[in-house]
Image (cartoon, rainbow, N blue to C red; front, side, top):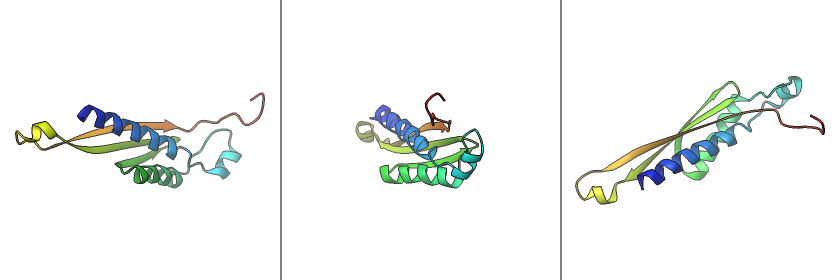
Length: 106
């Protein structure tokens, strides 16, 4: 169960980061040749994803990269009988905004 919770944390963090990287600064993106994130929009999108999925996590935006760390508390059912409580697992994911194809030939 702990390994499954860790995989869930990683998957949640990666998915939230991908959602966050869609928070583009549209005006800056049109003016420049690259991709520019709106840090507030990216954080909001990633946090909204975490809220919908019920995961606790932190969101950081560094340049064109969104980094998310998810924390899950997993009960130790069998070991709980021996007096061991819950364990906490974390997963980290990141996504970087890149310019996509906008026209044929690009």
